[in-house]
Image 1 (cartoon, rainbow, N blue to C red):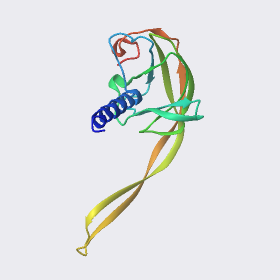
Image 2: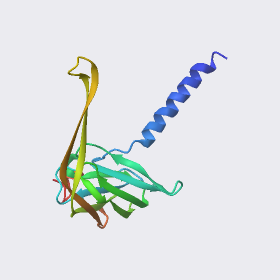
Image 3: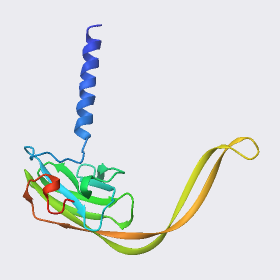
Image 4: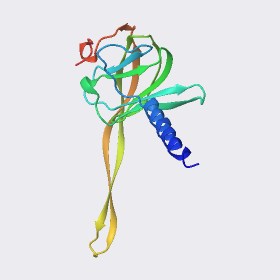
Length: 180
């Protein structure tokens, strides 16, 4: 009985590591394409500091699932994600812009190739953004408490459109014509 505990522990550890590695989808840029892998480059002409969120449609659950969501700008402003070759339905938005209508697109990913997707942000007017700043600490009466500071500011709202380009031979991101 005691012999099985270490084996069970290592099997669970291995299974957990494989699960985490299988779920990780990072911004990728290998020197050459991997086998059985296609790539999609997401970029916007008018962007310099965009934080991308990409969701993929899951046929099993009939809903969009998060594929990539980062509060940092990808290198050169181009987000490159690896996919299994085939057709993928994606929904894309920006985390640091007010987007009224996210872009929903169908992408055909080919093995060993890059499919470029160019996004255009169309001005959809302005809106008011409410901010709340919550602080904890001492109060004027000497007690510990919280303070909430509420503010409003006007911000531009955008509607996103996406244009899927033809698949091209694999090149590192910085050698692509749209790579900065």
